[in-house]
Image (cartoon, rainbow, N blue to C red; front, side, top):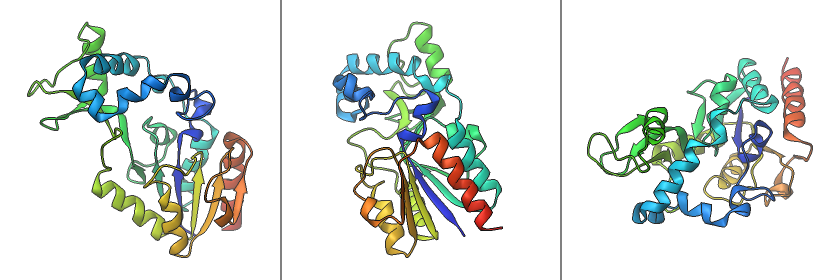
Length: 241
């Protein structure tokens, strides 16, 4: 039974990475932080870029470790049941947990690389952050001198077409689609649930709060993700033996 998943910020909160819109979310506590991931503000205002680089330097992803939920999805792949793992997260914790990079579809890109908005040069984020630590508060592209940002999708930017196509294909070609730790309010990611349902897949939602797709799900799980997802994965693997 091929299983595809969509994971959101809620799967990584137990690893110490706060979500964005929750009660303790980054943007809830500091609404101005959204400007650092809004492309027009980022390009127009050097101070926004300087704030963004300071935030990247201290991002909790650098010290975060995969939690039981990430590890459970790596187990699902080892059991031969994983079709694809589509994630809205940029932290790279799925890969660190053991999920194969070719199975992970990073809808919003990755924090582990930097990109130049002018010449598209991709650079390891660690190299750029070393320049920030050395005193460059808005490090330009080493090749063309252009503005650099994280290799992630900002507000005002479209998803990369091939990445979105891969996510849609994952939703269309599974028998079970599982949405984990996502509010299912941000599109086009949320629409993947509808794509899977239209293709005849069953839908399971693992999330602390209600989502717009709850009425269409075969099952809705409200327990903490770090406890609920490993149990659910065990159910799946035992059911297919």
